[in-house]
Length: 171
Image (tube, rainbow, N blue to C red; front, top):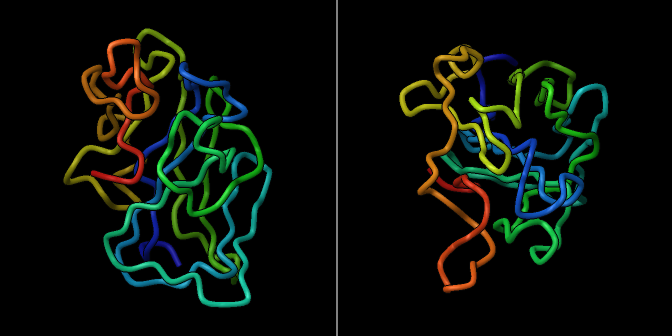
């Protein structure tokens, strides 16, 4: 399966605006039309299988957000989730894998050091434009921390966006 859609394009293992158990998310970009039925999300060793009695259709070039909590009031006002995943995005590092129904690997991405000076709490990691392939998204130099001016989520006291740094569900 490797090299086919979908693949990981970003992750938030250490949200600051809400708790980790509510606000962790990762993002997947599809490079082709796909039915997600049977796709397995693996976070560390914990697996979540996507399942529906009908087709879970996703179109080419869609950004999908998978989070810990489907309640936008609790998860930092993430966009609608494609699905809720089990497991924990450990701040010290880990692996997220997307597997086909046949067990074949679509993509896996590793990270280290969230909540550090290089990757501060409340900032997502995203794949740089032009490096959106299963091989390129694993290279540390092809990943970047979301800029401080790019935020989503809960409004701050003066009505601006005061949530965490990231672009869940979009480029």
